[in-house]
Image 1 (tube, rainbow, N blue to C red):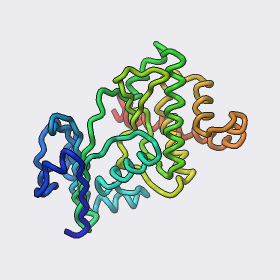
Image 2: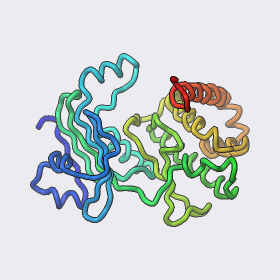
Image 3: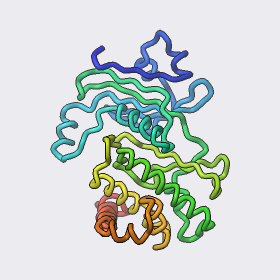
Length: 274
């Protein structure tokens, strides 16, 4: 079929040999996390291991035009997440581990695609892990190590031409086996379906990612020194140079985070819209 591409790793390569992978994916069963007309996400067990499966069945021209008229790039399938996971692996950024991908159909409004990723467990999102830091601060060495690791992942990602577009603490998974220590930390970045990949990351999109991350960390009790520690690690430069050269960015981060905070309170906070 026109526009078809299929990549299968083990155990799917062997088990689905001679089968239509698209039919095999549609037949998978498990805990459904999202079910709408154009998209399905579920957790399934296959050959004794757990995986997450995302199936895209085409968003339709109406949704495409709706996004374009709002000056947003529509997500047309699983291909974006597949490419972003591969690019981040090249950059040394731990992310979701894709083991199967398929896409077919030349018509972007009706493209059928899927992505299967290994379940990352045991893990906890940084949003959940850090939510009580204000009341119960973690050991300083562990906190500082986490700040440096997030900064390093962000720097590698942006330097390699990738911007996330949903760059929040909830999309960082902290691995719990072995238990995290300052000397042994592992974080994986997930939810890459809106990521953009270019030769270089435009400053505008870099700043949007950083503003989203800053916004998501507003409530966890980071100090000014913590924020400076992040900036020094992210820019990999003397702090005095960063504060001088990136003054416009720092002002924008504050403005953008406040804008996101107002938007959150308007749309999602308890009692919003009542």
